Length: 70
Image 1: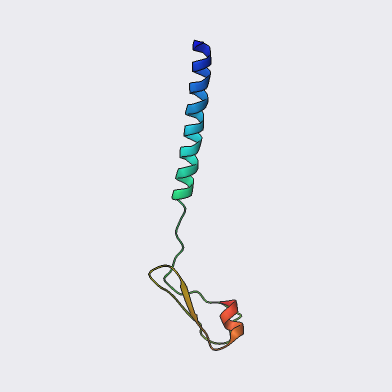
Image 2: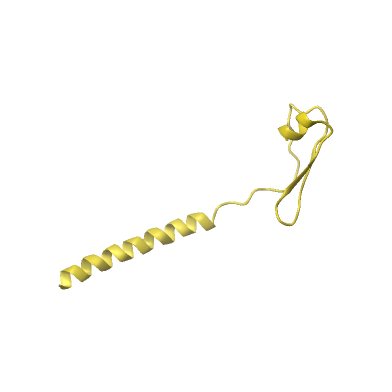
């Protein structure tokens, strides 16, 4: 009976450690950079991209091609 509890506790501890590692990897992902400039060679005109407080991008371009490329 004691052997059963040892094996069960080792499995439970192993699963908990695995879940903690997965949680750490999930929560520690780098955030995207929302500031600065990026120069794209295929654009015809200047395109401006703003992000609001919720992270939603707002794209302003003179042509649809530039809009969808950006």
